[in-house]
Length: 166
Image (cartoon, rainbow, N blue to C red; front, side):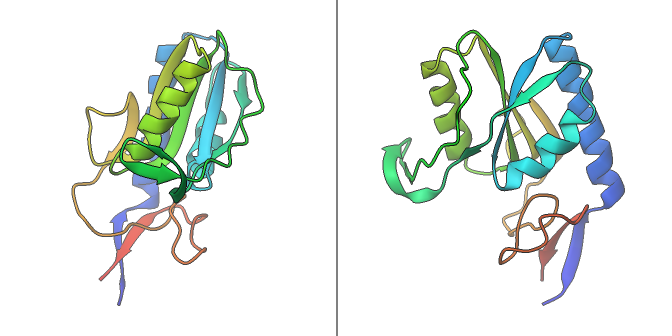
């Protein structure tokens, strides 16, 4: 199998810049809690945080499908790191990819139940443009993607482009 670049490093960087711009407009200088979905969303969240016009708090959360709480037709082993109080705060959920949407829906409900004043969703890559508030890249394929937060057997999260194997 060969690596086939789906999004170049320039496209990823432009997407992150666009997402940061969108979020800055939405936040209007207000402090927000960025919630990276671990581990993949950490890449995007850190890149966005670097370009924010207002201070941000970080509160990573870890979810894994298939073991634990049953929500939205998907099982989660909710091993959350959510240590910050979200009550009355703007919460920005950040993930590497919006695929089925199960993780983002679960976390959005969690933020609402924790009384966030507003919940914004952001993903570097989406397969559903209408499902997230801020997104950088659109992908309509079914192949697994790697790089820029997306891992392949535990590696390549740190590379600055996105690829698939063919």
